[in-house]
Image 1 (cartoon, rainbow, N blue to C red):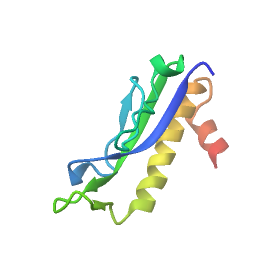
Image 2 (image 1 turned 90 degrees about the vertical axis):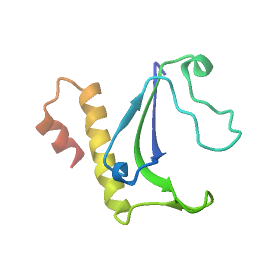
Image 3 (image 1 turned 120 degrees about the vertical axis):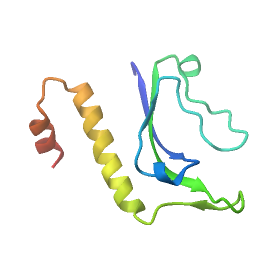
Length: 106
C-alpha cells in the first residue's frame, strides 16, 4: 500500500467531548493497551500512517478500572462513521460531488 489509514475510538478526559470532536494525526496510532509495542507508524511500516478518531469513552472519575460511554453510543458511532466515511471518500474522490458520494453511500 502507499499509505495506511487507521480509525479508532478515543478515550476523553472530558465528558463534553464524547462524540463531539474529531482527532486527526499523521504520526500514526498507538493502541491504548498497556505495554503494547504495536505502534502503527511510518517508521515501522514504511508508508505514511494517518489516524482518525472520535472520543467515545472515558474513565470514570471514581476508579480507574471503570470505563463509561454515552447513552447514545450507537448513534454517536453511526454518525461518526458516516462523517469520517464521507470525509475519506471526498478526499480520495475529489472529482465526485457531495451529492454523488451520498448517492453511492446510500
